[in-house]
Image (cartoon, rainbow, N blue to C red):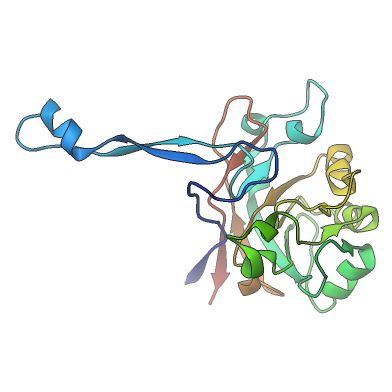
Length: 228
């Protein structure tokens, strides 16, 4: 029987989102004491309103987020098979905040780990575990350099994800990883959680996006199915 590992960060008002993105706002839209007046027999209901970026919480980028070409796929036009599949997780938690993750770092992390073509590849930096819920979460994390980014493409990874706000170094002004994703048409997840539970293991990853018409990305409920 498979164990379900939740890889999704909580969505709440006041959560830290990538600088410049729309803040997450949640409010009570209907209350029981308001709606009970609309029915007979005591029935009532409660509901909330949500306002958030399609890149706010744990989410996946659409290619259109990275690629300015008019025909770049939006999230509703991307193959659902991209968001589900076998995968593994590499440990990069020794990398210091605002340092670069190179192809050599990835090769060392992959030693003894089975990384397959068409995998979902997750990169554990420890950032969520150390800093989630603090302002430092938005700036104190490592990111892939150009060599590390193209290592992912060369391994023919179909999609990848990180436990940070971005796979790029927060001090970078050129975003080599996003540029690789644009060139190669590779999407990725950001703001994952609990990757420490998957390091070096094989699992099945599930992280389907919402069907947002024209969406440049989407919040997801990311889960790993781990054989016990």
